[in-house]
Length: 224
Ligand SMILES: [Fe+2]
Image 1 (cartoon, rainbow, N blue to C red):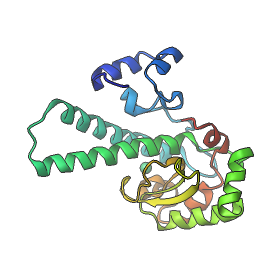
Image 2 (cartoon, rainbow, N blue to C red):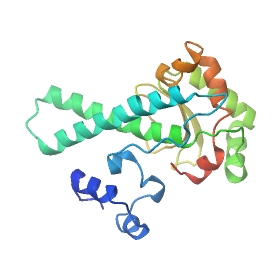
Image 3 (spheres, rainbow, N blue to C red):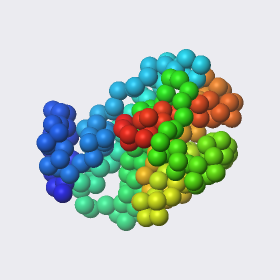
Image 4 (tube, rainbow, N blue to C red):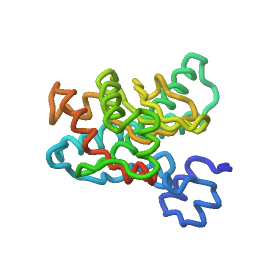
């Protein structure tokens, strides 16, 4: 169980975790680099993706929006850890904002880490799960694109551990329409900040290119 204070845990991670330390702390090694643990953003995997996202688009998104969410989360978490005398309205707003910002951090980490610089498709078990649930990869893709066009925040492919099913989910504000216990596999950011530098108001064009740039190997491995 994690019983360390946020500050102590942050220091621990900043110094670098060994495999033994990750195991002792009962952490998912795929997530040891998350900003929620380290307090620092994960560096961009791709500086640019030619034909999809420019260096300027990715840099602004990574620094201002992912980085901003992490800074906001950390500030709120510190306040909620160190102070107790909040009025109930203020406390409620802070609790909700912390969840929204933590979700934003997690989803941005999946988004950036699971972008591919070349087209590829799921293989093996994951491909079979998609076919079983959606009928075919193309049907999943069409459903996911439609979910993305309807979302003001995120379109997600998630896996539910309770029934083993995959779902496409549209979630706004990082925290609306969350499917409890489900794990996001693919996270498509549909906020304007994710595409406006490169696509202006052509959201559909961005979405249709996104689905060609999912790194399905990274999805399968669960890595960020
Ligand atoms: Fe974003």
